[in-house]
Length: 199
Image (cartoon, rainbow, N blue to C red):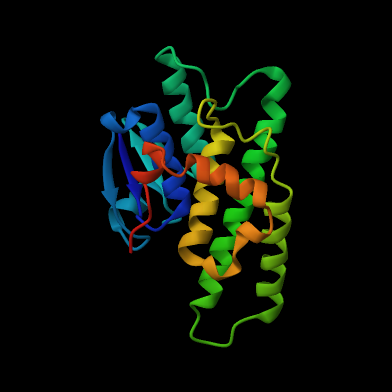
């Protein structure tokens, strides 16, 4: 398999975290690139990262890539990170969607702050409200822990890591101290440390 990624993309980090956690990283060639890459656009016409190539299978969009990799992990006899039992499935997937929503707002904020022209106070305020609400409403029961990792665990760690990387002035830990404690417990995991963003 080949993963086209960026060391600063939180969506690529999410996929990379899953690869490391499951051990599928050993079967994957990591190709650091940018949206300007012509090779990337052969597989993803939108030029967005990450993108995964596995033989004839070509995927982009991090939730879809993660689900595909999870199927491979499950086929090897390991428990699925997506399908963690019928009773918990929708709780976990809701937590997964919330984490991706936090990422969307965080990335949009970071991109807006990098603009050379006048920044939109309206959108910056709207995204900050979304970030605060998302952090405050995190469902800790659905997020798992070091012994019960699921896709929401991984996506949430990617989101919080990006906030620390690009928007640390927001001090998200003040919005949810319980979530901050949860993040700290996972911060030393190998799959977290191995995927830390780099400029």
